[in-house]
Structure formats: structure tokens, C-alpha cells
Amino acid sequence: MRKTQNNYLNMAIAVLQLFTNYKNVWANIKLVASHRDKVNQTVEEIKAASIKQTENNPVGHTASKEQTRDVLESTLYQVALCVRTYAGVTENEVLLEKTNFSRSGLHALRENDLFSIANMMASICMEYLNDLAEYEIDIKMVDNLKNLANQLQTLYAQRDTIVDERMEATTHIEQLLKQLRKQLKTLDDLVEAYIKDDTFVATYFNSRRIHDIKGRHAKKEDDENKENDDKKENDDKTI
Image 1 (cartoon, rainbow, N blue to C red):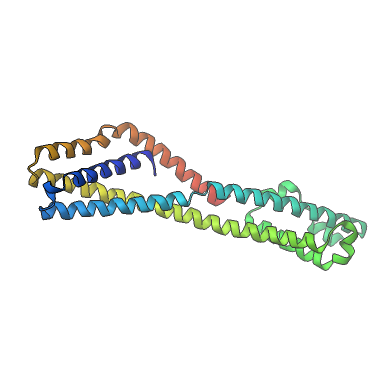
Image 2: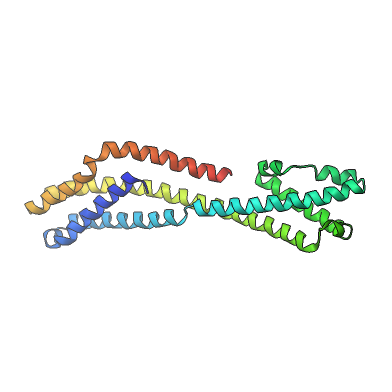
């Protein structure tokens, strides 16, 4: 959650705590009690969505994905060099053409193209496995290549799920906060109309104003943070 979102949530929590502290003032007023319960439910839903948002932070997962991809690219290029050497010695032009790629070229590939080349190289190694033995290509290296490709495919799939769930939670939080603002405005009217305890009313509206006083500066900062968060999530999904 962004700073202004947390500020607003904390304000709502403070308001609910006030209701808890002065329960005798409002408990018998059905309209107030009913709407206070709606506010409380929305606050709990926001807390749950915030936990989901935090749990689906892609930062650590992205680092693991990038590390695994780097190992796969290095392994794939090493295998290709060995096969290319064999192809050159045996004048196998087909194999020379298939292994004619660079390390930087692998790094620039989209994920599906990288997986295709990894699978192609694994198939070539299996086809020429006996001949490639003296070029330091064995079944363990082929299995390692396959395992790395499978691990990376799994990480990419998990990345998509994590980013999607985080974006879903982020959108849900924004919707819940809009709902909370409407509920609190209604609660403002109910408190002013039906509660006669001056201390409670004064404390209630003081709690409600805490967020609004800092609103302009915080909103600017919040908009900047939102733009950065959206960019990070979109960047991660396109890597």
C-alpha cells in the first residue's frame, strides 16, 4: 500500500478504536451501530488485501528468475561451443548453422525462443551423444541443461501469477478505499445527527481530519509512488 492509502487506513482504524472506547455512546443507536460495522468490515478487507499484496511482491522472485536464466544461458552457450567444435571438425554444416549464436544473443532472446534453443540443443546432444563424448558432452550435461530450462519455465510461470495476484490485490485495495471513503462520509452524518456526547463527537471529527490536513502533499507523493509501482510491475512482466 502507498503512503496516503496507509494514512487513510490508519485514520479509519483510529476512528474504529474510538467507537470501541465509547461503546456506550452509540451501541443502542441502530443506524450508527450498523454503519460502524460496515466500516469495520471494509477495514478488515483492506488489511487482508494488503497482506496479499505484500505476499506477492515480485522483487525476490525476479532476482531468482534472473539468476537461473543467467546460469541457463551460460550452460547453453558452453554446450553450443562444444557441439560447434565437433561440427567444425566433422564439417557438419547443418550443426554449424544451428549452433551459430552468441552469448549476448541468448541474453537478448524472448523466453520462449530461449526455451526452444535449449530444447533443440538437448535433442542434438542426445542424437550425437556417443560422438560428442570426447568433446566433454555427456548425459549429465544434457540433463542439467533440461533441468535448468524446466526450472526457468516454472519461475516465469510463477512470476506471471505473482504479478497478476499483486495487481489484483492493488486494484481491490483501491476499490475498497473508495468504498471506505463513502462509508465514512455517511458515518460523519450519522455521528453528527444522532450522537449527543460532545466529547465523542469532537474526538471523532478530530480523528477524521488527521488525514485531510496532510492530504495535498501526500497525494502528490502518492501519485508518484503509484506511477513507479505500476512501472515496476509492468517491467517485471515483460522481462
